[in-house]
Length: 125
Image (cartoon, rainbow, N blue to C red; front, top):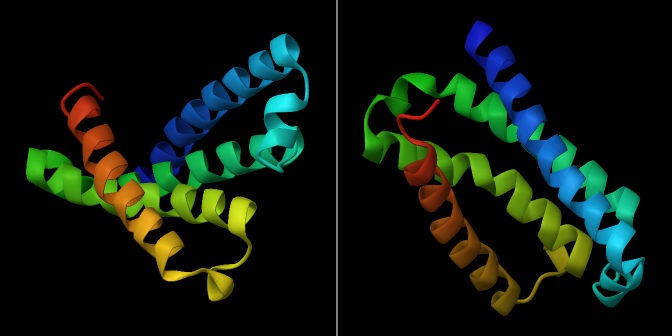
């Protein structure tokens, strides 16, 4: 439980950093980038914060697997999944309405960003 809580805290920090990026984009470019993608700033902020906390909790819960780089990359696959599904739901609606192209896009996103993020952070935290 301790690992899950500490992971969630680290995830919250990452989520808040991404929120900061979104707020800076909004401050510099206004609402246009969000309208262009048919999302709102509050929805993006909620997604980043909640996904960060959930991903961090997942990483914390699976921490023993992160001792090796391949294990960490596997955990990265699992941890990035909530973010991928959050983005997909925001852009294309609930997964039950997704086309096969969207499912393939989600799979590619997860397969690239999960292991890549874990590889980048492995041994640094």
